Image (cartoon, rainbow, N blue to C red):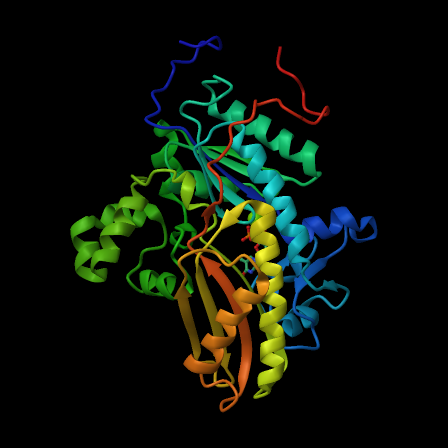
Length: 375
Ligand code: TTP
Ligand code: MG
């Protein structure tokens, strides 16, 4: 029994998933007070052909969401404030957030700029109650950045991710081992990470609306109907996930890209984009203390065919000019750029890892004074 008289539940592992709320838009609202409380839409310009990166919570009731063409977002939300993304600002914030998370446990896996898993089964505060750790983390992030995060606490990564998404923004949801089944029973299949609109449609065709429906169908039938993927869905619907938090995978790729306002065959224009990207990418990597050796060029031709061409180097280039030289070579030798009109160009570095072994600062070193000190 614990102090509240409740029987203590046995947790195989305690995982927290942290996901920032409307990340890019929240940074813009923080930095521009005049945008607070207003629908802010970050991404391509509505006059152009780019897409929405994200929308503030004020814009979401209008139906605006990530990956929607910005022009469509403008039709849905004419009073929206449309902003171009400021990636350096978001990367800087992300680095602050990830550094905070690493103070609680070295077992932090950052899966994107605004999202990470932590294994706090054992943590540096020595707190058993993972929900209490998640509460501290949310306060810590807010004190340092003035941005809100939502957190999910659960016995595995899959459930923790579902939980962090359950009550956004500024939410905290706990799924305990004993509440897992009830939690999943009515959960729509679309909420399973990896189930997009196409898979959802397919599942609905067979009458599977919720995780409960998948569990009732059983593994055998699902494998018959959907092959290996069916078996995977069954495991998740039962709330099982054996994946570990992998601290060294960090963010797997960092990239930047742009959709042109009109398709182009102009090689000079493409090359000048790549030079700008190379400068940004290398600056970011150096600043965030990471290194990556695989250079990835991405092109989308006017007919929407998309290709990537990559090259892995013996070590990360020191100067942006060297990174650019690789990108240019890929562009000129391994694509049809110049001969075929191009709609989008992007450059990325993958296989990222920390340049130095992660440090283990004291948990409360340089802690913002706003964070309540434990006594
Ligand atoms: P998400 O965490 O998916 O979205 P979000 O943080 O904006 O909102 P939520 O409160 O629902 O978590 O993505 C994090 C950031 O990544 C987002 O602010 C912008 C960027 N992003 C894109 O650029 N394109 C996309 O399609 C998505 C989904 C995100
Ligand atoms: Mg987010």
